[in-house]
Image (tube, rainbow over all chains, first blue to last red):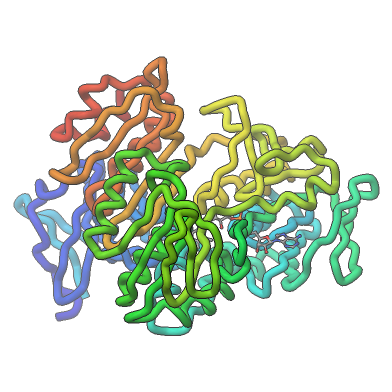
Length: 105
Length: 401
Ligand SMILES: Cc1cc2nc3c(=O)[nH]c(=O)nc-3n(C[C@H](O)[C@H](O)[C@H](O)COP(=O)(O)OP(=O)(O)OC[C@H]3O[C@@H](n4cnc5c(N)ncnc54)[C@H](O)[C@@H]3O)c2cc1C
Ligand code: FES
């Protein structure tokens, strides 16, 4: 099951400049859509206290953790302030026929 | 650059001093045995967790090595000599400073009644060890004080299967800092989980295991915990004749009356340019972090005023309280219903400026809107009240307006 493209959702399931959670094979991912309709995917849980990032706020290309404001760049997974020090893993994305695919594994 | 106090604010300041380009020595002097660690888990996971709690180091503490920051633990500053610009350590050491930061935090307020010294309190990692001996299934925990820490401890004890009685002197919970209706919802939540409350109850005296109320009634349990607030550690500042009231007084750039001495975090009462001209002291982890970073920066570069909108959270059972800004400055309240039971409350000042927002409920319902509110407060917007209340419209649209 490694390195496969997984059909994650319809692109319209994600609002502009927002995030949703997606579970696959027991792993939680966060799927993002930017205001200019680019799509990104990272691990779904904050590296501070394993909280679902899908409940957080996306501003530009930054996701803010809902719990203590830890921030990550959604395009690279890098930490951008707050109490977090471990980066998020990112996953490649692809849009085909109105659906978002991510490269899982 | 010398920092007194190795807590959340002191740690952030040390790293910020380096980030601001200072290449000279940076020393953080801390009384505790640890590097800066996170206090918020102390009333939550550190109490309920299976494993003996280890301090969870703040993220800045992990950068001390790379940033070449000298950290002296287990050393208490006994006084500051402003004339010679030196701090004196209790063991006799002396450290000279160019700029000094007071980040001494606060201590749990002792219970000022007969036998008050028998009550356990919570501020440090070590305090958790003492509490864990009693916070167990089947025990009866008596908590004096219905503030955030008292309530978090009540929720944690309940989780562990203990019986809990909370005694509060006022006729409502969380009278400081949390709007009444939200405090009422928190009370209901605790009661639904089985915690008992004695509101408007004055304590006459305590022993290790009992509390006598002024009415003569006696409540027996297995341990008495005093969670009656925190008092700022201002002794060094007042001995050095710096102005203090409920905290070391600073201007909006976190400077005390002495241009070479700054103060921030739980020990400081600071002016916030967005809110009111009178200094306010807050006990918030985010504020300690924001102010610590700003103080460190201002010790090196030309000082800037604080801008960050204060924010704090509290975890109670599966729910979260989040508060941004200063709800108590609000004259008008507008509610945005997030679901049947959860509402986001907005607080607007007399001229219609948004000054605060607060909500209690599942984090997934409230976190995004709270963050947006924080930004709206920062922008000093005067929003249309019906738009704030319209839960079917994304709050984010107001940011663009
Ligand atoms: C149990 C608990 C739970 C909390 N939960 C939350 C929460 O859920 N949400 C939230 O927003 N906030 C919470 N807080 C508040 C938050 O932790 C504080 O606001 C924050 O720690 C303040 O940081 P500080 O650096 O100003 O002070 P502190 O963290 O108190 O650090 C000050 C340090 O200075 C040292 N010191 C004092 N005097 C001297 C001296 N003379 N010489 C040397 N060292 C000295 C002290 O030993 C201490 O280590 C909680 C606090 C506690 C105690
Ligand atoms: S859980 Fe994400 S910042 Fe703490």
